[in-house]
Length: 344
Image 1 (cartoon, rainbow, N blue to C red):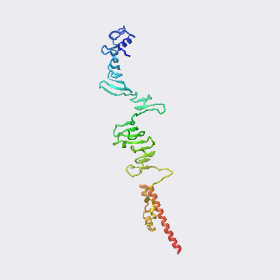
Image 2: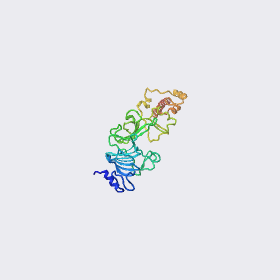
Image 3: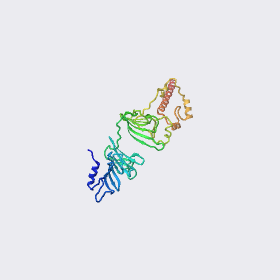
Image 4: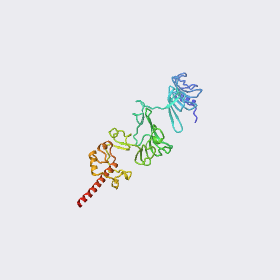
């Protein structure tokens, strides 16, 4: 249906006053030449609403665009402040665009919504305490980021201050390094490919968690590629953890467990070599002299060394077994001498 704007103006105006050929009121209380009227432009055919001889609203005959505070609305609905700064709403096929427009500089900017307290935006919250606050009483309700392609649905946290990093939190798709269905935390501040930039990964298949594993799928419920500290890193014994020692797990105050299994690399790391026929055991007199001089058994670290360096459980167990086996050889030799004495 086609609407003639001139006829529409005449019809509306007749409801409250007579109009002249220009669409202006000619009634006694609003005579021709007065500054308040509803009419149309003879040349443009635009529908106009004027107050104090200033056009307050314009419906463009050529485009159908409607403007408040402007006579040249460039979008379907424009609200303008003194014809310069304003808001424009422009419908597209699948969405509507809301933008702020500065006509003086011909620039568009995102629409800024703010509360009177200073720039916070609330969704379902009339007193937002942050730049964006979403409040809802509905279970599992909140903010959704939906990806319809093969990439990741992501949330980006950018810190542009000195030494700041830009981070990404992703639900990954098939085209991502991390693989479809996996959750990851990504550090854009690290150079190289996604292999190094993926700081944290949760497998969508197994639920396994990887820290420092890059894009490699974690093989255990918790897989950590690097050193792990449990405790206060500022305490004595933990200082320099990243530069001293090759151990991967540091635990303060001990570990409580029902079972500990220590792996031994080769048979040479265990003490059965004591019973080899070529193994030389110190004589009792040599052992006595060593103990008097060093105040500890041969091959066993001193108390001071243990305090400074700790002990390797597997190595210490092997050393203690070595001493037990040497003691067994002493006992066997001593028993032979006793038997010889008894025969005499």
